[in-house]
Length: 568
Ligand code: DMJ
Image (cartoon, rainbow, N blue to C red):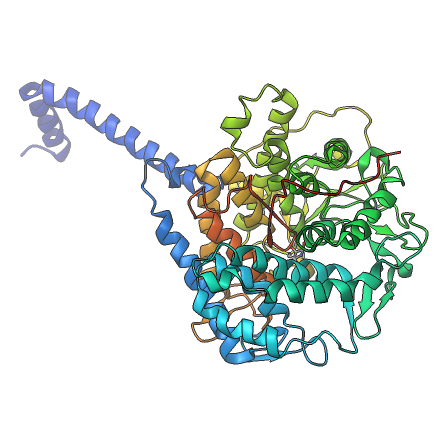
């Protein structure tokens, strides 16, 4: 009998001699199969390690109208839950299904902040109760201090935006509705005492029934710079509507006083004393207390006040020179903070609040037009092209704040690994690292500290995604927005009856709830997502400006007044 070895040899020989063609091709075939498998594996790995996510939209048809409807449903769920469980209250606690007030009788923070989103989504039957509440219940004569900035951007802004959008509603009686403007005048008049400081820089707070401006209880009585310089859109639009110049002048004065400080590189520190008009800290950051400034004032009066463009261009150059640095492993650009002002070391921290910036940079570069159109202007330059690239880079970093966490939701604050030398002051250009789009590298660079791990349903990233999509027309930004929306759906929705909540830890699944729905979830986050998925001619960026609470005002073509001051 032949041994096993001999049998195997005989078998191999028989295969070889009887079918050499088969063997050669079998070899080729298996090589191809191995190669295909290896490629598939590499692709699979790349897809899982590539936070950019381009593969999601390549070649696939996406029904954006359906996605837009999903956002509308999330708004309806949130709003209806508030109405059922906390109607008339300033705060809504969706887990405990109750509301609470921020002043003796409440000021309607959620109701007024939501009016224009209701209109935008064409949910007019849901306007009936808010209108009745404005007419019958809202009373500003309360023994209560309110924050000048919040009251302006949310309440005055919300009412003015509702007034503007009501003129666009299909039904004629809504178009003639004067309640929003009447209430806007009332609230603005209550706010005017805030401007009675020695310099005109508004005090941080105002007492409603005593009609008195009040310096901040903390921060040595200083007002926050961003707050003082963010009230102009609302006040100027109100002057435009009423013909009363007072609002315009009061708000404008703050800009002159700030400009007269001649901030180095156009970068303003975060606190200003309302009586001396001087900055009271050296700290510079674009996050909390430093997050809003010039561009929109330039756009609001359709470019008729070049002083604001100058100020913006100077500040943007200052940001690029002094605040932008890169992460160590992935070379992502981020906006750091200067705790001791220009010349001091950078602190590698970026608030989610800073994520309004990419959209604003793109808006400033094209004035709301599409990039493809702006590139044909004689005035288009390499500098503008660089600004768009910077906007894209920062947008990616903001998106990174979502992708690197377990829930896909951004933390309130991200810290970054940066090279030590990149955090030291360095005159002149230092080459920035090349970006690596690998999730593994990204995850090494983002640090989420336990105290910063909450998510307050903030809008800044989706705000920028909306602007970036409208301007660059790159569908990637819409895709990122869709993923963010899904993360909110998955991790912040409590139930159909209770609605959505902010959460305490974006790296815990399920994330512990904070039992609070922020009013800007309705006013901003869902509004920007809805607009991101809407057709591009719906609320065109060339016709409106959004205030810092996402309330919508028209670009004003014929304005009676000018700045009345120039930079000294
Ligand atoms: C909102 O009130 C406004 O967007 C403000 O400018 C910053 N903070 C919140 C949202 O994060």
